[in-house]
Image 1 (cartoon, rainbow, N blue to C red):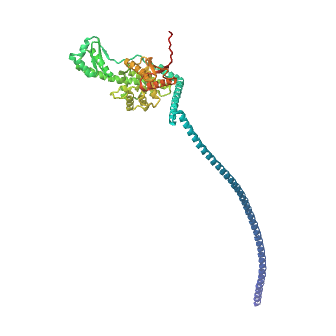
Image 2 (image 1 turned 180 degrees about the vertical axis):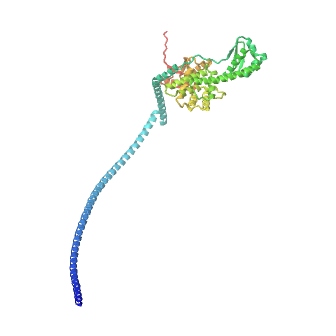
Length: 507
């Protein structure tokens, strides 16, 4: 048993010994293999490092070559720039030389010009002195004469030019203007008879005069006090004259007399009652007339006070022409002409109706009726173009719209047509005399004749005193002075006659 144990122990020891020996052998072999692998890896790494070094070296050399190429290119550019700069420098130097040469040449020319200028001034002074010596005039005197001559020539040329323009305008515009005016007049049908203000009250017999006068004149005094009208009872058969500046008062007095005479009861108390009643009736009739007029003309939105003034025009006349009929006619003319010209006919009709409201105010301020009418229109909130047309239809204010000349023209058409107005004989004769005397005030005028009811003025001048150009200028000056200083209907034609007559007698 022990034997077997010893054998087992010996066998085990031998096993351990063999294993140890085998392990040593294996370690040496592994070590050699590891060393061989390490050597191979080392050689491989060295080869890779050499290859990397070669690649980096090649890359570096390539970069160095590129940099060298860039440096060489930059050097080439720098050399080219240096060459260009040198060329420019030489060119600039050449130009500077040329400029210096030109500058020297210009200085020489300036010096020559200065010398010539001094010579010219010297020659001008000599020529001026010679001219003054020859003409006997100083330079200032000669200049003044030259200016006067140029003024006369310019004035004559301007006059001729104005006449040419006026003739051309008449040829082109006169035809169209006449066409529009004629069409406007033809399209407006109005009465041509004059409606006079009533100033005479007719009675059936002279017995009524005593009843109107009353005992000790009480009736007539009461009637005059109530109406504000002077009642003239004279020897005129079957007529009593009513005298008052206010046509409304005159109408109230006429209607009151008519009712009193018809009724037969004439005494102070009845007179006051009838006059008050008639005054209210007339006021109502005035308002009704204004409303009816605005409705007939198609005018809306008028202030009630303006409507009353329009109705009041019925009892007012201007040169014998009834003011309301005149205003209605002007309104229709304005609307027609505005339509022909492509403007607003309603505004034109409104301005035409209101253009003379300054003739029928409740008070009587010292203003032209056109300005007063414009202020009334402004007071009652009429539009600015309407107010301007009212105020400028007699040129008291400046015209601002096309509506203003239309109202002015239509007012002249209504007042100047045949049968529209009466003119006092004394005023007519005075106007003709003023025309003739105005023309006689000019030097060289021998005789003057106002013909065609003052529509034409013929002026005879001395042939030895005025020449043809001065005659033409005289016609223009007379026309302008008449236009500025006189008032006249329509237009006045000025004809200046210059003729030379040679008279001999055979004996």
